[in-house]
Picture 1 (tube, one colour):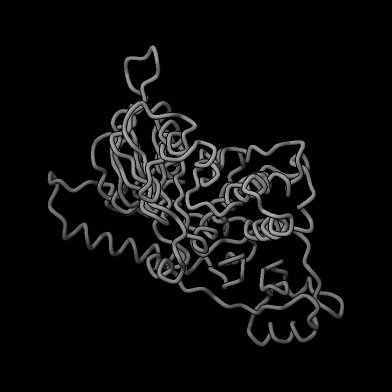
Picture 2 (picture 1 turned 135 degrees about the vertical axis):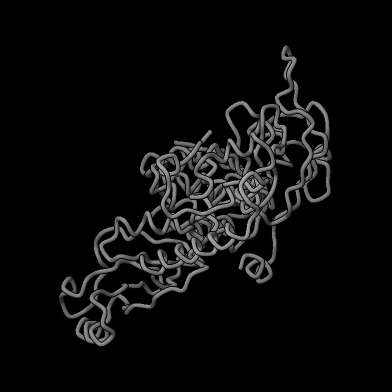
Length: 417
C-alpha cells in the first residue's frame, strides 16, 4: 500500500547520509555521539528513539548545524553540509520543535512567511504560500491568518509550526519532540495530520521522540539509539517489533511489543463502510428519506470540499435544509492505526469513526466489528505461526506473537523511555 502511494507521488525529499559522525563536548571524556553512520532514504520518515541522554537530539541538530560535529561528514542529497554557509543550509531545512516555537509578537501569517521573505519571495507569492500551507495543515486561512499565537490552542500552534517548517518547500524536515506538549487526543490528530501531509509531499523527515508507540506509528524506519548514539537497531517497524536486534532494543520496545504490533495495521488495510452522506444546504426531507431507505439512523454531513463536518442522528435533523452540525467531529486519517481507531470508537456514540484522506477528504466509516474481526484474524494467523514455530527453548522471541488479551504490562503501554 505504502509503496503504491509513493509511486503515485513525486518524492520531494533528499537522502541524508551520516558517515562516522561524532560529537565530543569540551571537558567530557565520553562522546555525546560516537561514530554514528546511517542513511535516511529520500522521502521517508525516520524516527530517532531512545532514552534521555542517548544523543538523538544532538544527532538531529548536527544535520542543520545547530550543533557542529567534532568529526565525520553529513551529506544531504549527496552534498556535504559544510559546503554551504550555515544560514543558507538552514533555509533549505525545515525545523519543527515542541510547542511550535512561534514568535508571540507576529501573526500566524508572519510566522509562516519568515523564511520565504528571507529568500526574497514577493508579497503575492508569500500570501499564496501561507494560505496553501494553512489549508494543508487543516486550518482555515481566512480565520487563522491574522491571529497571534496566544489566540491559538496548543494543537493549533503546533500545526502552524509545521506549516512554517514547510514554508520554503525544503527537501528535509527535522522535528524534535514535535507533539510532546499536547494532550493525547490532539497528539493523535497531529500525528494523523503529519501522515496525511507526508502522503502528499513525501519529504525526508527525521523526527526525535521518546515514545516508541509514536515511532512505530509514524516511521517508515525506526532508529533505536543507546548512550553515545550507538545504534541498537535501525530497521522497519515490523522488524523492530518482531525481531529486536539485541537486549537493549528488546528492553526498549518493552513488554507490550505484541500489543504494539496492532500499530502496524492501518485503517487503509480494512474495508470502509459507506453510510448515507449529505451536504450542507441539502433538503432535510430528502436526506432523511435516503437514510431510512439505506437503513441508517444517522448521516455524515460534508462541506463543499467533501470534508466531514458532523455525524448527526436523524432525530437531530430539523428545518428544511441541512445545516452545519454543532460539536467537534473526530476524524481519523486512513493511515491511522487500529489502536487509534479503537480509542476513537470508544468515545463515539456511533460504534465507528469517520475516515479521511488527503486534505481531510471524506473516505468512509470504519466500524467496531470490522476492526475486531481483523484483530481476530490476526490472532488466528499468529496461532498458526506459533504451532509451526520451533518448540520451546528455541530462538523464537515472544515479541513475534500477537495477543488480543493484553497483560497488565501491555495495557500500561510498555516503556516510553
